[in-house]
Length: 68
Image (cartoon, rainbow, N blue to C red; front, top):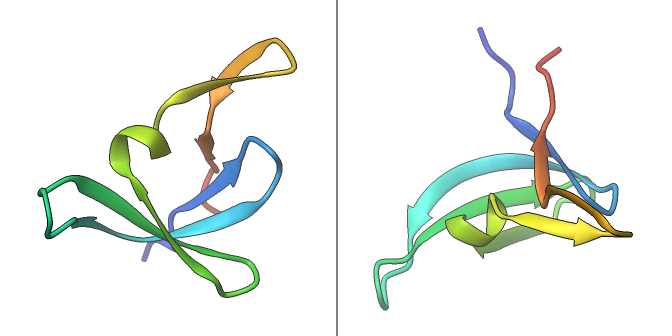
């Protein structure tokens, strides 16, 4: 049985993907995810998977971690 899908934010935080959902107002696909502190966040799917430039290096905003 597979464990939770986990991602590392480019600034270092670890997050568990809760689910993919749809924003009611305009049907934007969103990602629902939970931080290590238990806080639940929502971000548009396009922004969740976008590439950011940090210290001059292009990297994913959230990088998928290998499952244990």
